[in-house]
Image 1 (tube, rainbow, N blue to C red):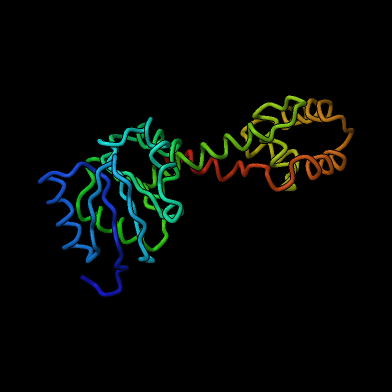
Image 2: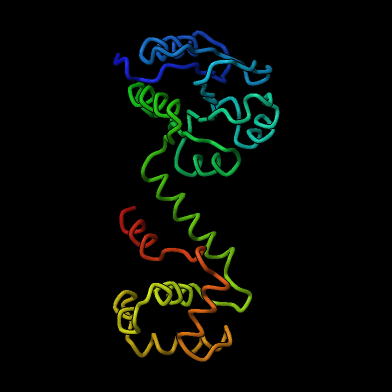
Length: 230
């Protein structure tokens, strides 16, 4: 084992059994980390160790009970990174991430070698999730961002795309090329946008964007790139 790997303490939250003890022994032997097993219903002790990770067995702490379990953590552990393992699939992972502030996700079929790599990454304050899961989270965030900050004037998703490109300085023809529509269609959309936000030209529209949307405007190109590589 390379000495450059971060060595710390791992709390394994699962039911104590011969199987879980074998798992803990394997992690200890292959990460050089101290592994402590705690049942889900016991109070977890605080630790003076700087590098600490809490691994939660989703077979024994369900997604529904995860928020309540997290709230009962000692105050000294509230900033400790949490990760869940034995996650069944993508939907299960997204559900778990929506309920708790997890920094890592390990699927049920994860290899033990990958598991050990993930532990070291999490102890180094990194995130540990599959690329597909990260892409889904980014797309979800961008969709939420677009919906959450959309003005009350009722701009559609397409109009928000055009506004994003308009704010980036794109001409009508450039917008048409990027959205694969005609320039006439772009002009029609701009007419409707100007009417909805009560402006009369591009300069007034840009001022409106700066005042009402500013830096929260989603990056349409990035979101589309992620969609293409899913």
